[in-house]
Image (tube, rainbow, N blue to C red; front, side, top):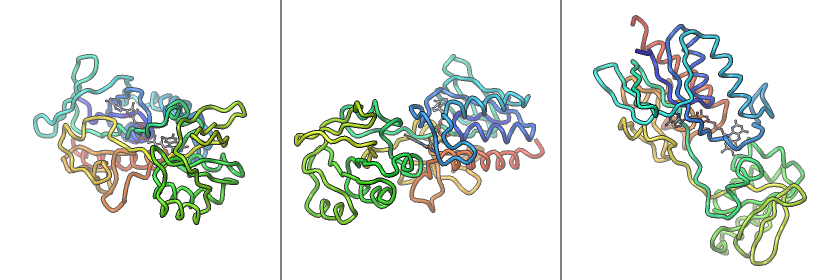
Length: 301
Ligand SMILES: Cc1cc2nc3c(=O)[nH]c(=O)nc-3n(C[C@H](O)[C@H](O)[C@H](O)COP(=O)(O)OP(=O)(O)OC[C@H]3O[C@@H](n4cnc5c(N)ncnc54)[C@H](O)[C@@H]3O)c2cc1C
């Protein structure tokens, strides 16, 4: 039996494994290979790793984990989790076997459901983004587009207005209302009269944004619509208490509402926050805290 099974091999799960390994606890880390930044070529706002490809970050982390005898990393999906006898959890794996541990850390992240704009999926993470902190600076002094929901578009304008040279807001599906249009213009945007029909790679290296009125070229697009959902079904399978954001509720040490189960990274946050603070550093920090909490709870066993 392992001390801990960690489901998730992004920054949260990898850091949790490192902390457990250093405290000579045994842990099995499972990774199905579905990362939130899976299409991203270079991650930013990660100190000492600004511009590092996420794949290199993960490879380096795995190489470092291989130095710790108690840590086993498997590129394998978990399919089902259940609480068994007291202090024991069973995880059914995609190869048909079952792994058992005293504790569980869920670090399975969130998945982005993009709005229905043809071409957007192919640009996601490369020329289409949602986080100004992650990808805004790369568009300094260049024209960009903001796509979709007026309220979130206004928020993006507030963050990106001092970085980009100009910002055009394009509605999705239908036109903006007069009030929405005015608010976006006051926030500094040019506002398209017609909804975006499709986006595509432009020969110039930027993005073509196509509407019924014509085509505009911008350096990149930021998506103001779209939703987040739990990547994996384990929070539901365990009956964890959830927050209005769709994330798992945790305390300061990542503990969930079920004893022995912690959660770290994008999939969870404290109730005091409006949503997950989605970033590589925040996820890794949460993974470390969750692992520290586990080490404390395992003391004496
Ligand atoms: C387009 C884009 C660009 C971004 N750019 C940046 C950036 O530049 N800088 C930055 O700090 N942040 C960036 N982010 C945010 C960052 O990617 C996330 O905050 C971070 O990856 C969260 O880490 P995590 O460990 O919680 O989840 P993830 O990195 O999503 O990892 C989830 C893990 O769970 C595993 N998993 C899921 N289901 C299962 C299962 N059933 N069995 C086994 N394993 C499973 C996955 O395989 C994966 O290993 C970006 C996000 C997006 C969408």
